[in-house]
Length: 271
Image (cartoon, rainbow, N blue to C red; front, side, top):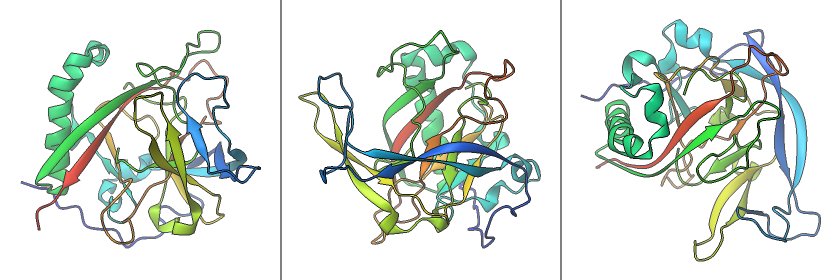
């Protein structure tokens, strides 16, 4: 049976004086030469990207008090563009060692995710097409960013194809979709090594109106849904998101390096 999560009418989700941290967010700037923006996702003698970056320190409001107060349903992918699924709904059977097994992720966590999406959204069909493990290493222990071990994406963006211990270092920040306008979005090419076809994402231009949130101390039994695209004429409630360094923990040994998994899925609803 699907769980009905009523769309919120509260804006903003949290008041200006609510608990928050600050973090540096990297926004898009046009390429100086007028080219179509791109990011190159393979090793080459050519530049990795041709876009500029506007770095701004912004307040990022903590959703933890809202979730702990039983108000997670005030987030909704059809309204805010993101949705917190609390642990009593999103609990996983995956053990810590399971996250190192691609076969276990595909055989167990994929089905858990499909069932969770159907339960929460009432979807009739869910197709998972990939997943990404993201890890942050401690200073001096860094390894290359590879398809098998991705780092958090430290710039504001929207994947046009829709989206585990406690995450303190480099958590995920999400913007309320109600603060995003279409003219903030810039299509950007994703260049892969041949023969992989070219992809595309939206990069995001800064607006003072963007309202940012994160879920502090997120556990493996808590899920965060993001909507990146909808076949509605206006594209639906899309969520800019980015990894960021939480100023409360930067340079402190108490910070646990982030390890997380993201699942990308196509979600269908029969009319």
